[in-house]
Length: 412
Image 1: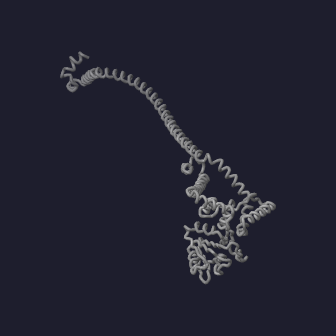
Image 2 (image 1 turned 30 degrees about the vertical axis):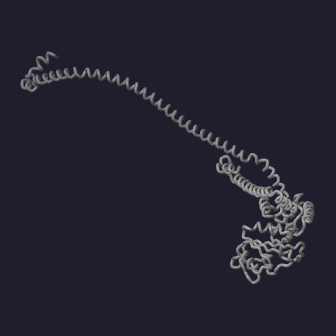
Image 3 (image 1 turned 90 degrees about the vertical axis):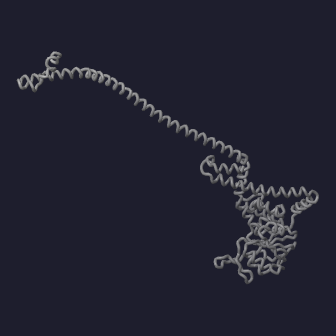
């Protein structure tokens, strides 16, 4: 090939176009020689490159094998990573749930401690109260029946006669299979301790006879006419109703009817005091509560006048006569009450007078303690009602009711 390049390819006359003019066969041979020379020259350049290509392709195949292996390893790692991430997420959620449960349990424990601290000491007292209420409930029918009889028929009689009658009635009830208390007490059956304490503060004597009289006044359907020679009922009514704009009238007052009409209209209490054995006939519609509706409004007629009748109106009547003789007809129109002082009431009042005279500071302290005791009992009743309402209205587990726990804790 070196000889061809030296002797032929480098000769300018060795050209296929020029050779053709001499011989067409020589032209073909010339082209073949030139092509071989070009091929040789190109082959010498391409051959190393082909070798390098083959080497590169071998290296590439090896590298691709390694790459594929690494890809498989990467896929395995990514799969493990995904599993670990899933486990991490699951554990994180579990951790958060456990933390929430720990926090919730801590709050429940705190609430339980508050609940136990607030109500733990009340269990025995409330158990005893529940047992007492069950006994009251069992005897309720008979006790209410006897109480109704006392209110309707025994107001005018002494404590001894009332006791004899209630004992007889109790035996009659038991003989007829009606349960009732063996130690019947009107004040325990129909009285409210907080209200009774307020009556005592207002001047009602603390003996059971006087308290029963207060219960009768509070529950009777007819207006009370109180036999009150010592003025105890007068004092009690005036003190009890002084904040309600009580009007005090006498039958001898010139304008007592006008005062009575205004009180009936506006629903304020009236005390008619110092009556004799006969009442003004014009009061009969009021005593009988002969109300009627006129134009959709509740009214009553006093004499020739028709006035509106307020349901808040209250009417009290007292007499200073020691032994009045009222006609039976009047007894059906009012609730007669014997407010004459009893021995127990007199002893209590005399003791108060003596202490006030000898040790006025003790009497003042006693009155303060009575007021404080009444306020404490009222507050205790309100708290108990609040606790019972909270416990009964709480839905589900009370330890999960934060507002209920706060109420119970504040009531402690």
